[in-house]
Length: 534
Image (cartoon, rainbow, N blue to C red; front, top):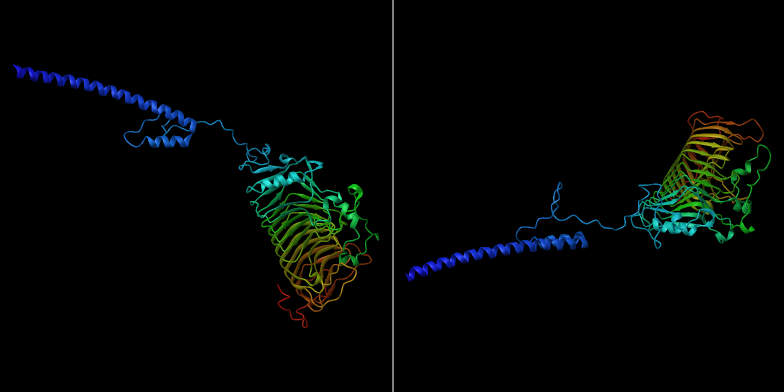
């Protein structure tokens, strides 16, 4: 009886223990589920406060063992591996001008721009554009910011006139492919004090890669204040000694405007727009007016491109070349109009692979190679093509001019399809060039070889062809094809074609006949040395 009672008691104890145990685990399970849910709610709240990076760390910490907690469900969309990042109430970046061209870029904050800004309007840097206030510092500030951003755009907006003093937009630490968008007008100062003792250029772009100046704007050099002071100080072009005006009157100088304060401008006259030491510079669309001296110059540049540009100054403004090239290679100029007081295009020493086509020239002194070899210097020019050009009322047409005493060479030249109208000297080689009243005779010279003229047609007023080559180093391999030049009218002071020490070939009959050209090669010219050739 006692044994049975003991066994029954044991069974009852086990049943009570099992019932109690199951209720305890259910309680613990309910408590654990509640704790995990509360933990996730707190973590989600912190995630929303801290942001995405913190949320990634939270998920990683809770994925070490067991099943991962399920994220909140979103009906109709797949559940992401963690809650989506919160919407931040941070200000949006301003729209760029590329998306909305009518929206100006933001004004600088504390003198700077966001690194995402690519357009820099000079008005946002304090420029007034009223034609009177000096905007030079605003241009400098806008350039300083554009210089930091590759392929940025510095904007000079239309409907404004910006008064800007001498300024240099310079590298070499600027980012490449900057665009100078010129749609307004930039005018030069006429106060002598703005120029000091004289500067070689007004607007300069130096040591840049891929710089482009484009737009419909105007660069006005206000050059007449310089011309009135120094109109008689400038050298005389050699061919001018032969010119007799048709109406027997001497042209009057350009009508001057008075310089500010009545002072005299410096004797050194600046180029309006100059590029120096730059790679792949481009100028397109703009107009350059009344430069004190040369309008557009390229020094030590490679890959030059100029097209659809207009250059204008009075025909008797002194030394106002249109485009001046020096020590520059791989140059393309086309689709442009040049009216000036000197060479429409001047090609100087160190130039090669120059291609000029479809340009209008006049008034001016035509398109020239040189002058070369001044002061016994060495000059090298090669591979020059000038074709499809119209010239009206110019002093010369296509010309090569060198000084006595120089050395080096000019070779590989083609002048093709040149239409001349009322041009005084359509075809010129002058190896006795002198821009003074008298020059000393010297035996050394820049050698000329491989000069080709084809389809040079139109009217002349003084002399159709003038070949004056060196006694000691004659011009060789000069060829003429389909040259047809007629006098504008029968009158006094017309000259027949002239040749001196010029050898080559007439590939077709010419009008007028050029019987002075010597066929073949010279027999007694001096042997060229390595110093002569380039």
